Length: 236
Image (tube, rainbow, N blue to C red; front, side, top):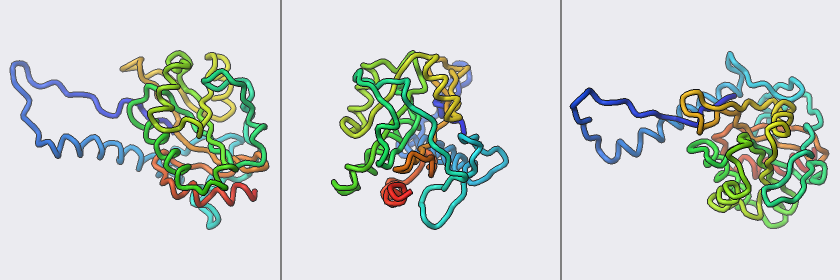
């Protein structure tokens, strides 16, 4: 599943003519509608549209009663995350979170639309958990922009979306990140119309306490879905 990080582009008005004024309410509603349409289409792809999303291990995804997210089959070990480092310079290995429910997603700090939505909803999900549950949950973000995601820009993004102390945001070289993207079947490429933006996959992956890739969530997931699924991930 690939999202363009540029949801809308301005359409120039005829030469010499001033564009008609739009009511303030309409100006606010239109961008929201565009985001909803794009995210709704993404959900349809996850549920089995004509162009299904590639998943690690060629797994398939289906809705089952145990999870609010889509359950993966077969449940294979999650691809390794051990070659990247957290934006604060500390080392990281996904295996160190064994015994926890781990939520993994792929974002970039300059993203104007989908990434802030995912980051905010992950924070909201974390905030809804009990203190005891939070102790058994880890949030991991992996960069899809090796050049733009510097330690400073990522730190600002993490603060802005209230993920400080809640999430690790992994960065690295283009080579290091490229290998991770391939293992997780994540697409990432510069937007041809605006190189400052990145077209990228935007799923949230649920990794069980035993280290298996177990669930996925579309970018427009509800925080309550994650909260509901944590006990199932811890028991898997």
